[in-house]
Length: 165
Image (cartoon, rainbow, N blue to C red):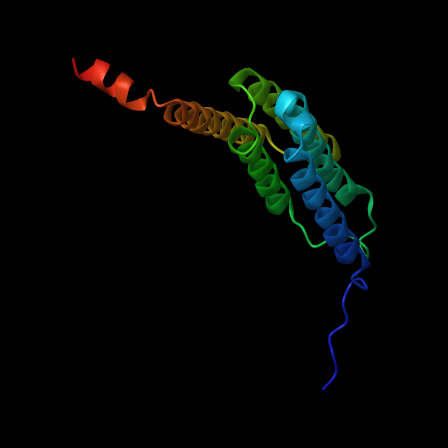
């Protein structure tokens, strides 16, 4: 039985997994140092911005590849990657709300500018719906961040008791 031909030889996946492995080990090592304890805000901001740049470069590389070398990621997959990145910025990184919002809004803006610049034939209804989805994701991310902060500080029950009175 003949094997189906693949688009690539798997080097991209190998390099991506090796880079991810190096990144995860580096992050684990850095977070156990005293440097991270004193500068967690700058380190977290840097890692969040690097994550946004990497996902934007994946989005950008899709448009510069030829049809034969183009990765198997549709526009829906790219949009899902954008939403996933936004939720990661809001939920995983220990950043204050204003930094999460600034990084997230800049990321959403750059993502949509790239998407529109390479596909200007989209109708206005599609563009409006994408902007509304971005606004909803930012609202959900902000809500998750605020609720996480409230629960971590132990003020959740105090606020609930004050509301009951």
